[in-house]
Length: 154
Image (tube, rainbow, N blue to C red; front, top):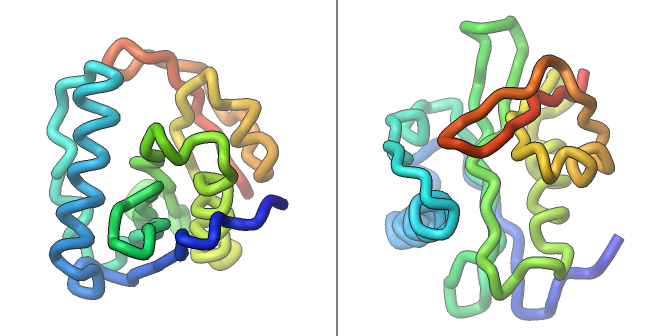
């Protein structure tokens, strides 16, 4: 396990109100930069699920507040009792390959507190997610023109 760069700190917030407004703005901006601009996926990122009381945000930020990486954890009890999902996994290009996304994902898995976890991994990253215990759990599918693989822990 690689140590985080000295200027990076991991943060976690249980519920939307626990995320400082400027921080959530920066998280949403990074998600737009990567998913909408870089990956050319036109979709409604701010889908209302960030506002759910049980949603957990996990992020890595620099000393000056820039977001290096983030994920959100959703309660999926309506689909399956106890199920959690990790999504909106994003890392700023300048921070890729430095172990930051791995640290954020490990913290997110820990925040799920032993519950089964679903992730819709971009298929080219399925092996990477496998390193954290995720295993394919269904047929692949296209989302916004990008191949995805459903994966689970538990």
